[in-house]
Image (cartoon, rainbow, N blue to C red):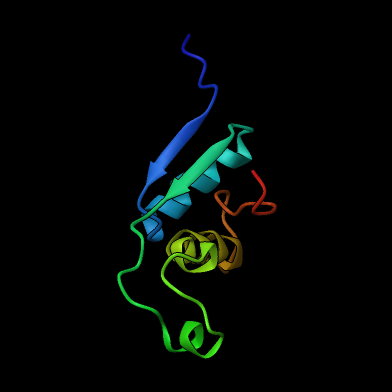
Length: 84
């Protein structure tokens, strides 16, 4: 039997975030990665952030985690929290 000790999922869209949530809920430490945005959002501009700020660089992956957590009805892939 193969034991998965940790995982990385590339792409934080609907499918990537669901896969990452499944792995996290199974107790596998999971890293969810996506592209770094090329442009600031209006909100990021208003907040005075730049493209090198972590909040901007992590935006797509953070949105994927939030989307999986808020899915209704919650499925078996819904993460308990975003810390795994």
